[in-house]
Image (tube, rainbow, N blue to C red):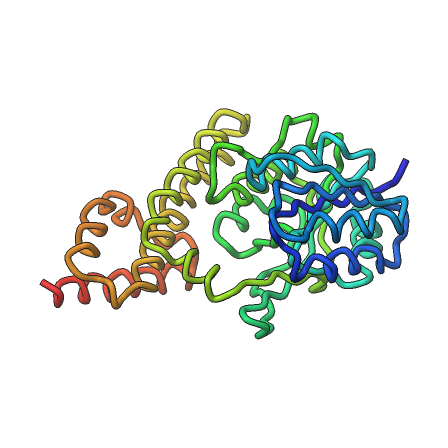
Length: 310
């Protein structure tokens, strides 16, 4: 059996899929299987995947009707034969030493992460994050330590023990929901203090993520995580602390920053957004240091802009 199962969900990624598969096959650590889950692609992705499957026995290919990335990843988890599981999106990349570094660092723990670069139309930037170990749940909520989906290594038995899967009823925030649940149950997280993965975005992705219609979707997934934490965390203090950070920072930040990124659209519709989510915005507290101060500044700036539009 392979030590690591690499899961790649695929949906119409013919332009970058070859590079993604190559970066896995080029890993210095060789004891892995590569599980390709084709989620109903209509381009040449299937042909590309099958061509590589013919060349390397470690590659396994499965196809399904288009049901979304969460269903594809979950199927990969069920099919995985490895002791450890890791995810890679079909248009992203790893450094050649990603698996070697992660296997070396995880030791006897269940969860390990590393840092990532992100690309917007080929412009490379380093993700701002602190590399911390142990119980990092609150740091993840406060966006201090927030690895990308491609930057994790997790024991399969751990996922099965707590029945951790990607939520199939969400089409926004599903990754954050999954990894927050992972971190809720593990207080001994390990990390590799290196930037070993790449996350590629286009301007279209960026515009979509800043759409004001995402505000309600943000609230839905975060309220769902809050409920999960309260239902599954036995330490009352830890549960309340996590919920407090959602209420006092993460949810207001999701609303305020999305409004700020759409300043030119802050007209009557923008004011309605503010009024509808006032109860969330009013919960902002100084619980996240400078980030909270910045959030409060942005809140006042958005309010001023909205009043000028009256």
